[in-house]
Image (cartoon, rainbow, N blue to C red; front, side, top):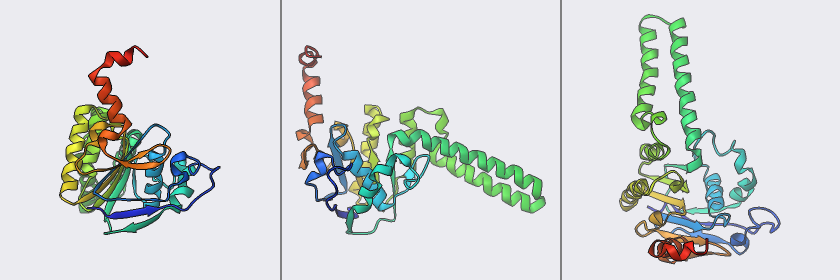
Length: 261
């Protein structure tokens, strides 16, 4: 399901980031033609910048230690994000923005929540008794058990395992999901697990995904629309991307690359 139909951006000052990035100099907008859109490009090309700006415009909740409004790392692109104009095909009822580097902030957030719930139990035991205490403590334990069922104990798994568990627990139908460079946390095998998860949700017309990535695996998601960021933003096939070409050529003949490194 393509909930978001297209975006447009008015021209901004060429001396101000991120309007100063080459990809945005003549950029006016993008149309989302399929349930999966993939942004690719070299580091600093603007793909993650546009994804973050779009998350700000859509006011999506962030999976991390803080929400987008209070995230100081996004201060430079807030004006850019607010300038984006959107058109919708259908309204999405769910969604989130998730960066690989925000995973540990999310784990910390869950640990803080667990401490708060334990504090609530101590407070209830001081102030309440009988049936009132039983009901209050039971409600708190219900919240703790719900979090454990949803995510498991993220302190006892690897970064990649935990990252995937969070996505498995949070992705639901009727949502729009912006995910920034998930391969940073995932082995090739875990990337394939994420590939399957996204593919199934998109095929059932249940969700829309916009993903910034360097992963050739994720670039091959079925029927994905791929935009490559460089001096411009162009729609390409996965086998036309620099990432795919370099990886394919390297794996076919690594010795030819090693001679020049």
